[in-house]
Image (tube, rainbow, N blue to C red; front, side, top):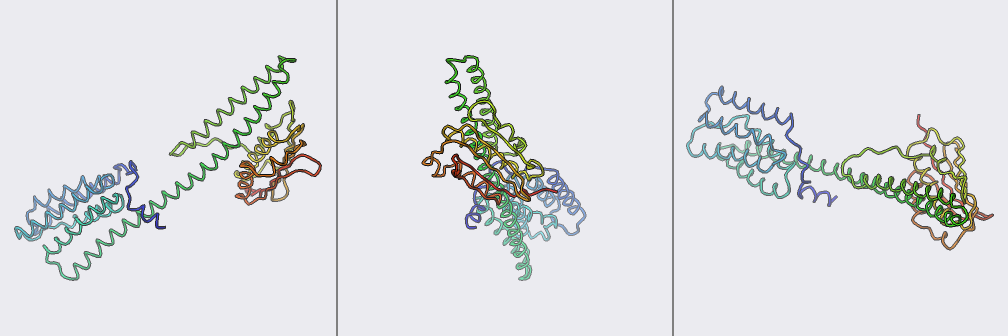
Length: 379
């Protein structure tokens, strides 16, 4: 909370001041029309042409109050100060227009959009002008109290809306950072899966290159295709990680895409079994199941020694979905008992969705990864 409070009075985000819009023009136009009309028809107004010209000087300040809040406040309250000085100097009588109350809008803009330095520089000037205006008009105690309360209310409103905008911006940054962390995990899963596949295919090519050149050529073509896919997905995700503005996200892969992981040729073979689990799943669950299966497959290919078969099974069990990935390899317990980033990431992903996760050696040999996630069936 203290950090947020301090940040309110720091320099604003550069380049984020809203441009002059239609409402700004309407406000400035209404003020100009009102000032002209009041200046012409109001009885007893002294130095009428001077007052009208000074009032119209506020029009540019109203237009630029968000982009240049300090300059706008200095111009607007400077006009009010000049009128107070004229009233004291020449004793000309009434020199105020009701429309000059628009200077309160400029004070609000200073607190709402100005930097900390601009607020520190501008508010004392406003306080001096307010005090001189009250002195020039010989304001009563009630007028002094009411005027001071009004000015403080405007300052408070500006601070409140500034705080709300800053808090909203911080929440958006936090959401974006969370999305980027998720994308970083996706990038790890994608790269690890494809690189493992490339490594396996390269090993196979080394075995057949001398005896079956045509088979080696097919494997090398598959490696090239896998590498191209990896680069494309990496570039797509890195582009999203670098983007500051909103971007269009391509549809994430889900359970329905798991058959693409199956591989009948080569060692180990990969078999995919789906049992009523590919429909009516919440998107986060659907995407998580695919990534969990992909990461588990990558781990199996990388760590399961002499594995000939990897099974990926997804089964619907009432309001939950169970994913199980098993291999028949010789498990290297020393390498697998200490959880790596892959297993930790899968466990965290599962827990965030309210599920359970387990991984370990099978009694009959091999390794299995199992995750149970709530299906969250949509209407």
